Length: 251
Image (cartoon, rainbow, N blue to C red; front, side, top):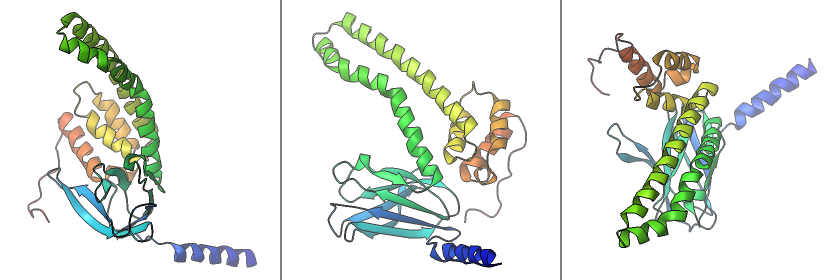
């Protein structure tokens, strides 16, 4: 009985200490070296694809915090006043995201604290490794291409373009395979439903295989905005009925 009471007490402490409730999000950030008063902007895209500010806060003593309401996972960005590069991450309800801003290189800032963001970081790193061969070729051969263009050496230009095209095609095939393998093996990841949504724009996609993948996704992914888009696309591609438009208009 004492053990049960202790376990219940521990559970109550965990609930009481939780900073994020259902339908809420929280962003805890460190901004070491960034001046007090600098504005941190949380942005997302509207229906037209335009970036809109969802929240803004000021840096205080090297820290910042944001809290608000959210109903489903979605990509957002954090932008520091005066910095051009935004930091992309996944925001979702009931989760606390931790962001460690890098003053010297905003692109090297770290996002962690949730399964989806940890997966996004790992997935991005793996894609970077795949595309390294292409980046290395560009870095190595840019001076040669510039020299060939200045001297109008079409033979050298065509040779470099052919080599680049071959590597580009190779990287493209490997990248596509990586996307597919990830979506098949990560049915809980928000990235997977975004990958499947993009795959359905490719005429060569196996619709039956795509539908089987979608059916393996968690229910909350299937009911997310991209999940609903996938469901409608599958129905359309199979020749079935799609969801009827709402008569109530946008809310």
